[in-house]
Length: 191
Image (cartoon, rainbow, N blue to C red; front, side, top):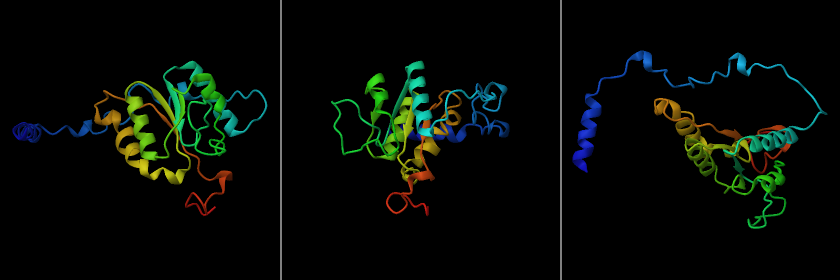
């Protein structure tokens, strides 16, 4: 084992350094340009005004129906299935996640997670690399710090570090500020 490690290290040290003009390769997707005209659309409002929570739940429902690779999970997601134990009254109501999504799409695609932010992001990165499209939720922005290594070093760097062989398509939802007014109990926010 030691010989194999030493040989690998010697090969790496002897390899030519990459050209300077390759430093920015794979920082962004070569296939998707969010600044392109494909993403520039005029708003087409229809229907009655609604809350952000209702719009998010409606969008999640539409996307779950459209793409079977999408999974939704996170902290305090409401549990609909009797087979999953509840940890407390009102679970999932703080951020108003919709338990009907779990009823409609099943507990394999919409589920609660442990209250462990690094676990949530790490699991989502693994799912995304394997072809799923996770939409994950961290309960409050101040709770995201344990997950920052996975966000910065794994998710954000996946395409770059793999030479564009892997991507990591995922959505991370994290509420901050707004009406929560939970600074004394759950955040460092002065609000």
